[in-house]
Length: 196
Image (cartoon, rainbow, N blue to C red; front, side):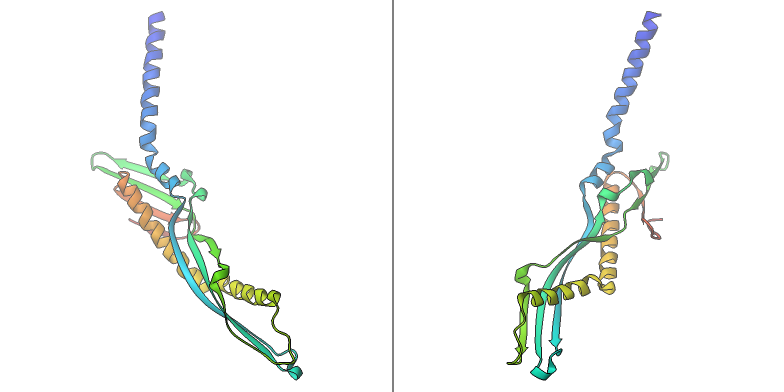
């Protein structure tokens, strides 16, 4: 009886050790994806011109100002939002194929920045009876241009499309390197895209 218990414990320990040894291999692709914090990142540098024509005191003349600024915008996949529970894997050992289905988070704007050095005043005209634009007014005009850029749907759609394509290509390559012969990728809330 004692020998049977010891034998059972040894077999159990061996099975546990084998399972633990297998675990890193099975999850190698997950680890690789977690390490890629922002997959498919695209970066756009966008030039924007914004103006102001203040005619509120037309009787005393008007004043005009024109600014140009560069914004650096990054879009990609935030892998902190990736849910590994949505992943399905099937393997056909006879055919030597291994397929994976996974859902990635939707692409999003990851950062939007304008450096002070990238804001330039191109033109200013102020009638002699009017006061110059104050620093506060200048900042407000540039902020309005920034807001317009953030609300530019055409630019956003273009960036989301590029980030999506980059993420698909990057994830497919990464998973193929991890032994998957077939990769099917979808994005949360979007239609299926990927290999059939």
